[in-house]
Image (cartoon, rainbow, N blue to C red):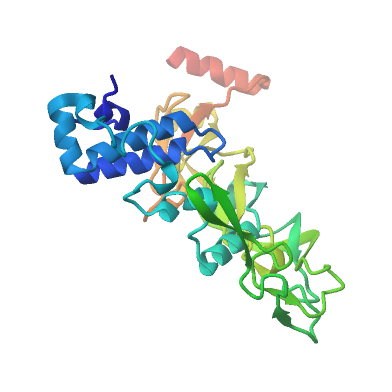
Length: 357
């Protein structure tokens, strides 16, 4: 025996609105005109809906089960006349995404504009650490579709314009009536002549053939923000592929890659570097000039008796935070440089020092 509540996937306490929503969802899913539709399942859920949507038949079903609604002359059994069935919902709304029957000319034009919008372009850009830390202006070039200079992307010659499409009469769409066992449906498709715009060129551009764009090398200048990190993506709105027939251009996505540096190593917004000092400087202490990433020089105090491998911090001398105020720090690792060869005089001095120690 069929369980109508189970067929619609609702509880026995479901409201009329919940039953209607469940049916609309399942009717679209199993409609026979869909590629993966199921006519048998569609009839079953419609039968369940016709019973449960009517308070009188629902009450009889709740009391007596299917026997209470399968009497002679019932319009709700499996032999129901589907072409005359009382569907309590907007059939055009339900199947609009399948038949596109309820769409307006404006919605189709918007869909056409999206269809011919330029694609986003992606590229890699390698920069050095100084450019990442301080920011930079770069000129880049890449191959893509660019707006036709002759017609400025409009697709027609400068001394002409547009006229109403004779095939769709300016509607941008072609309507065709389609018959199904549920009745007639208006199927709407983009006009193949004007491509959904409702207008065509009076005189097609000779340079681009009416496409409004050409495949060529595009050059643009971009600003690298200070503090950008490797693998971050810069999005340049409208700098990607030009749209067809004057439609919107896509965006340019630039993946940043930072070259290794010969002096500094980056971790987040902090920088690390090595500083070599001799044995005497390590014992007695000293002052050393450190050249920063921005080429400025700061003085670093080396304390007496420092050990090789010790790390000293220069606060706020790292890389600028890209999304907040301030910057990272610079960490200097001290390395004591041991000479490989010494003179006779130096050896004597070192031997005397060794005795002192």
